[in-house]
Image (cartoon, rainbow, N blue to C red; front, side, top):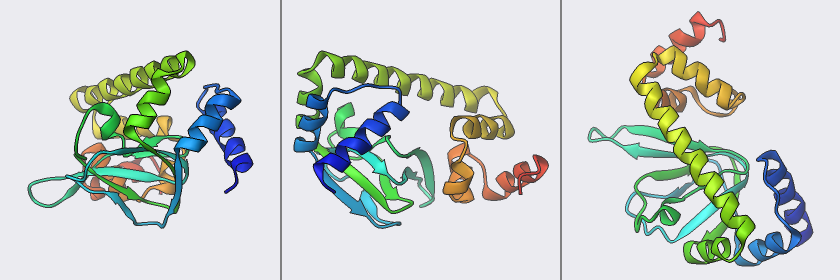
Length: 197
Protein backbone atom coordinates (compact mmCIF):
# COMPACT_ATOMS: atom_id res chain seq x y z
CA UNK A 1 0.00 0.00 0.00
CA UNK A 2 1.31 3.41 -0.85
CA UNK A 3 0.52 6.57 1.09
CA UNK A 4 -1.87 7.91 -1.55
CA UNK A 5 -4.02 4.75 -1.63
CA UNK A 6 -4.08 4.63 2.19
CA UNK A 7 -5.16 8.28 2.27
CA UNK A 8 -8.02 7.54 -0.15
CA UNK A 9 -9.12 4.53 1.89
CA UNK A 10 -9.01 6.48 5.17
CA UNK A 11 -11.09 9.29 3.66
CA UNK A 12 -13.70 6.76 2.49
CA UNK A 13 -13.83 5.12 5.92
CA UNK A 14 -14.09 8.50 7.63
CA UNK A 15 -16.97 9.49 5.33
CA UNK A 16 -18.67 6.13 5.93
CA UNK A 17 -18.45 6.77 9.69
CA UNK A 18 -19.59 10.39 9.42
CA UNK A 19 -16.32 12.04 10.47
CA UNK A 20 -14.01 14.47 8.71
CA UNK A 21 -10.23 14.56 8.98
CA UNK A 22 -7.89 17.07 7.40
CA UNK A 23 -5.00 15.96 5.17
CA UNK A 24 -2.49 16.92 7.88
CA UNK A 25 -4.14 14.65 10.48
CA UNK A 26 -4.36 11.74 8.04
CA UNK A 27 -0.71 12.17 7.05
CA UNK A 28 0.38 12.17 10.68
CA UNK A 29 -1.73 9.06 11.38
CA UNK A 30 -0.18 7.25 8.41
CA UNK A 31 3.33 8.15 9.62
CA UNK A 32 2.60 6.85 13.14
CA UNK A 33 0.97 3.60 12.03
CA UNK A 34 2.12 0.22 10.86
CA UNK A 35 0.00 -1.60 8.30
CA UNK A 36 -0.41 -5.36 8.44
CA UNK A 37 -2.54 -7.89 6.60
CA UNK A 38 -3.71 -10.84 8.70
CA UNK A 39 -4.98 -14.09 7.21
CA UNK A 40 -8.45 -15.33 8.09
CA UNK A 41 -8.37 -17.14 11.45
CA UNK A 42 -5.30 -15.35 12.81
CA UNK A 43 -5.26 -14.70 16.56
CA UNK A 44 -4.22 -11.06 16.78
CA UNK A 45 -4.07 -10.82 20.58
CA UNK A 46 -4.79 -13.24 23.40
CA UNK A 47 -6.01 -12.76 26.95
CA UNK A 48 -3.11 -11.55 29.08
CA UNK A 49 -1.06 -10.10 26.19
CA UNK A 50 0.27 -6.62 26.88
CA UNK A 51 -2.18 -3.97 25.63
CA UNK A 52 0.39 -1.77 23.93
CA UNK A 53 -1.27 -1.27 20.54
CA UNK A 54 -4.63 -0.24 19.13
CA UNK A 55 -5.80 -0.82 15.57
CA UNK A 56 -8.31 0.33 12.99
CA UNK A 57 -9.73 -2.22 10.56
CA UNK A 58 -9.07 -0.79 7.10
CA UNK A 59 -10.58 -3.81 5.39
CA UNK A 60 -11.91 -7.06 6.77
CA UNK A 61 -13.59 -8.30 9.92
CA UNK A 62 -12.27 -8.91 13.43
CA UNK A 63 -14.04 -10.58 16.35
CA UNK A 64 -13.25 -10.32 20.04
CA UNK A 65 -14.32 -12.98 22.50
CA UNK A 66 -14.00 -14.15 26.08
CA UNK A 67 -13.31 -17.69 27.27
CA UNK A 68 -15.67 -18.91 30.01
CA UNK A 69 -14.79 -21.32 32.83
CA UNK A 70 -15.82 -24.29 30.63
CA UNK A 71 -13.50 -23.23 27.81
CA UNK A 72 -16.28 -21.91 25.55
CA UNK A 73 -15.74 -18.72 23.61
CA UNK A 74 -18.36 -15.99 23.99
CA UNK A 75 -18.36 -13.20 21.42
CA UNK A 76 -18.04 -9.70 22.87
CA UNK A 77 -18.19 -7.89 19.56
CA UNK A 78 -17.11 -7.38 15.98
CA UNK A 79 -14.99 -4.74 14.25
CA UNK A 80 -15.88 -4.14 10.61
CA UNK A 81 -14.26 -1.84 8.05
CA UNK A 82 -13.40 1.41 9.83
CA UNK A 83 -13.93 -0.02 13.30
CA UNK A 84 -11.45 -0.03 16.14
CA UNK A 85 -10.02 -3.26 17.50
CA UNK A 86 -7.43 -4.49 20.00
CA UNK A 87 -8.47 -1.41 21.94
CA UNK A 88 -8.10 -2.33 25.63
CA UNK A 89 -4.90 -0.26 25.89
CA UNK A 90 -6.61 3.01 24.97
CA UNK A 91 -9.28 2.21 27.58
CA UNK A 92 -6.67 1.99 30.32
CA UNK A 93 -6.10 -1.77 30.50
CA UNK A 94 -2.52 -3.02 30.78
CA UNK A 95 -3.41 -6.45 29.38
CA UNK A 96 -5.94 -7.75 26.89
CA UNK A 97 -9.08 -9.13 28.52
CA UNK A 98 -10.33 -10.94 25.43
CA UNK A 99 -9.05 -12.72 22.34
CA UNK A 100 -8.98 -10.84 19.03
CA UNK A 101 -9.29 -12.95 15.86
CA UNK A 102 -9.57 -12.10 12.17
CA UNK A 103 -12.70 -13.69 10.68
CA UNK A 104 -11.70 -12.58 7.19
CA UNK A 105 -8.40 -11.54 5.70
CA UNK A 106 -8.03 -8.18 7.42
CA UNK A 107 -5.82 -5.15 6.86
CA UNK A 108 -5.15 -3.28 10.10
CA UNK A 109 -3.69 0.15 10.75
CA UNK A 110 -1.81 -0.39 14.02
CA UNK A 111 -0.72 2.32 16.46
CA UNK A 112 1.30 2.36 19.65
CA UNK A 113 -1.26 3.27 22.36
CA UNK A 114 0.74 6.21 23.71
CA UNK A 115 1.40 7.67 20.24
CA UNK A 116 -2.30 7.23 19.38
CA UNK A 117 -3.44 9.05 22.52
CA UNK A 118 -0.83 11.80 22.05
CA UNK A 119 -2.06 12.31 18.47
CA UNK A 120 -5.66 12.65 19.69
CA UNK A 121 -4.78 15.05 22.51
CA UNK A 122 -2.73 17.27 20.21
CA UNK A 123 -5.66 18.13 17.94
CA UNK A 124 -9.00 19.67 18.96
CA UNK A 125 -10.88 18.07 16.06
CA UNK A 126 -9.52 14.63 17.00
CA UNK A 127 -10.48 15.21 20.65
CA UNK A 128 -14.05 15.99 19.59
CA UNK A 129 -14.18 12.89 17.37
CA UNK A 130 -12.69 10.78 20.18
CA UNK A 131 -15.34 12.01 22.63
CA UNK A 132 -18.05 11.15 20.08
CA UNK A 133 -16.56 7.66 19.63
CA UNK A 134 -16.47 7.13 23.39
CA UNK A 135 -20.06 8.35 23.74
CA UNK A 136 -21.17 6.03 20.92
CA UNK A 137 -19.37 3.16 22.61
CA UNK A 138 -21.05 3.88 25.92
CA UNK A 139 -24.46 4.18 24.25
CA UNK A 140 -23.87 0.85 22.55
CA UNK A 141 -22.90 -0.83 25.84
CA UNK A 142 -26.06 0.52 27.49
CA UNK A 143 -28.15 -0.64 24.52
CA UNK A 144 -26.56 -4.10 24.65
CA UNK A 145 -27.04 -4.42 28.41
CA UNK A 146 -30.63 -3.27 28.04
CA UNK A 147 -31.16 -5.92 25.36
CA UNK A 148 -30.14 -8.69 27.73
CA UNK A 149 -32.37 -7.32 30.47
CA UNK A 150 -35.61 -6.55 28.62
CA UNK A 151 -35.54 -8.14 25.15
CA UNK A 152 -35.99 -11.72 24.08
CA UNK A 153 -33.46 -13.40 21.75
CA UNK A 154 -35.49 -12.63 18.61
CA UNK A 155 -35.61 -8.92 19.47
CA UNK A 156 -31.86 -8.87 20.17
CA UNK A 157 -31.23 -10.58 16.83
CA UNK A 158 -33.42 -8.12 14.91
CA UNK A 159 -31.66 -5.16 16.55
CA UNK A 160 -28.27 -6.64 15.67
CA UNK A 161 -29.33 -7.03 12.04
CA UNK A 162 -30.59 -3.44 12.00
CA UNK A 163 -27.25 -2.23 13.34
CA UNK A 164 -25.20 -4.48 11.01
CA UNK A 165 -27.41 -5.35 7.99
CA UNK A 166 -24.83 -7.61 6.34
CA UNK A 167 -23.68 -9.40 9.49
CA UNK A 168 -25.29 -12.72 8.52
CA UNK A 169 -23.41 -12.66 5.21
CA UNK A 170 -20.03 -12.17 6.89
CA UNK A 171 -20.14 -13.76 10.35
CA UNK A 172 -20.65 -17.48 11.07
CA UNK A 173 -23.95 -18.21 12.82
CA UNK A 174 -22.20 -19.76 15.86
CA UNK A 175 -20.47 -16.42 16.61
CA UNK A 176 -23.68 -14.43 16.18
CA UNK A 177 -25.37 -16.87 18.58
CA UNK A 178 -22.75 -16.43 21.31
CA UNK A 179 -22.94 -12.67 20.83
CA UNK A 180 -26.70 -12.86 21.43
CA UNK A 181 -26.24 -15.13 24.42
CA UNK A 182 -27.98 -18.14 22.85
CA UNK A 183 -27.08 -21.51 21.37
CA UNK A 184 -26.61 -21.80 17.58
CA UNK A 185 -29.65 -24.11 17.43
CA UNK A 186 -31.78 -21.36 19.00
CA UNK A 187 -30.56 -18.84 16.44
CA UNK A 188 -31.38 -21.30 13.69
CA UNK A 189 -34.96 -21.59 15.03
CA UNK A 190 -35.27 -17.80 15.22
CA UNK A 191 -34.05 -17.40 11.65
CA UNK A 192 -36.39 -20.13 10.46
CA UNK A 193 -39.33 -18.46 12.23
CA UNK A 194 -38.36 -15.21 10.50
CA UNK A 195 -37.99 -17.21 7.25
CA UNK A 196 -34.39 -16.15 6.67
CA UNK A 197 -32.87 -19.53 5.94
